[in-house]
Length: 311
Image (tube, rainbow, N blue to C red; front, side):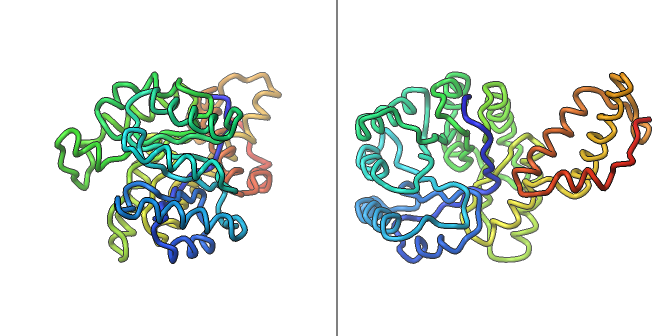
């Protein structure tokens, strides 16, 4: 992928059918705001949702608390996508289009071609795609190579469960193959964002606790972000997908000691009785890179460990 890293720890869906929720989104601090024209909008409200979104984005400043403004259109096979794209192509502030129910590269090409025709130029809008079916999982290698504009994969668990007649359980074991396949394909193709399933419960302490556990579980599988459906979920998810304090300190110690090890000509060395070699250093470097994206002052953290020596 030609696109650089984008921080999408939380991707919050906002129904474009609700003027109240659109206005509230201006006050939110979330990495990605995804204004939704698809699942959260009834068929009878599709046209009104487009009008609401156009009015909202053209009548005021860009929502200041978000790094990215996205729009989830209806699927290419729905009959609504062309009208959605016609609206989106004229809107200010939109960085990204989210394409649902992608089954292969042709769905991505459909959207890019529609944007190109409408804008009379090659589009620069980033693309996120939702993986929602067995067909899509099987087509992951070709989906990941469909366009240099592809910036992320999103796992849609509920539609995937419907397609395979699965029942979602708290342990999420029924989704392990699909989630692992998505992460593996994205990493192999250098697709920067890999966004995990929605946690459907919110509104109480127990829901936030399970959200945190589910987020950390997804992070452990290799996802670097998560879809959210309520503002109360955002802080928990963004904290989970940021480097934790112990993770950050470990990475800083590794990188400080590695600089000294390299100066001594050591290819492998030790820390706390464990061998440190190239893959471990690479992991530490990636943690600090992500920490920097999250707004953490990495140099200050490394300075805390300036006396760290390789063993």
